[in-house]
Length: 162
Image 1 (cartoon, rainbow, N blue to C red):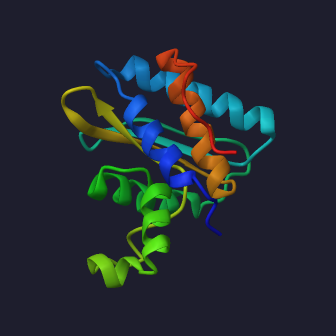
Image 2 (cartoon, rainbow, N blue to C red):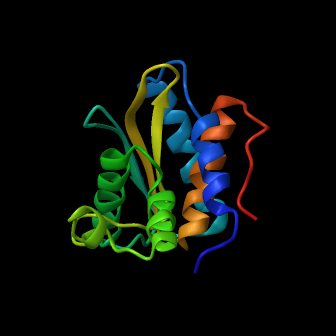
Image 3 (cartoon, rainbow, N blue to C red):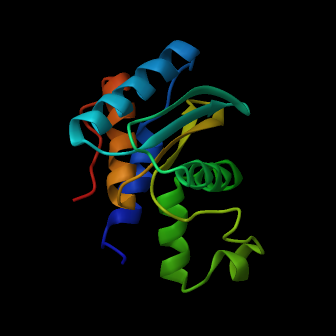
């Protein structure tokens, strides 16, 4: 299902949620926020943060499905290939009426076009990594990541998906 305005909102989020620098301590703060949010929701989830191909945060909550690890990998592949959130790439392709296979020659076995993957970008530098959530509906996974990044960046001006 395509929600009107989501792609524009996500584009604004990606533009505003950039860091001046990123460190393992920042990854810990983002990841800890995500985990606390999942626990508060009583949600079985998995979270990963990677920088330059190195995992700097990885955790699950109770009863997280083993298959979430593969969803994480596939969402990360989308973020790192396109420099966009996995939800944005999925929405863009849906609006074009194309599959990832048709448009880019990539397979669903390796690329998940579902919300929850978000780029970690440095202002003036660009993409350096990804933060990925898996376990809930795609808009919720995406929103949780945006909330965690906005909190750590102390940004109250970030538009949210309705």
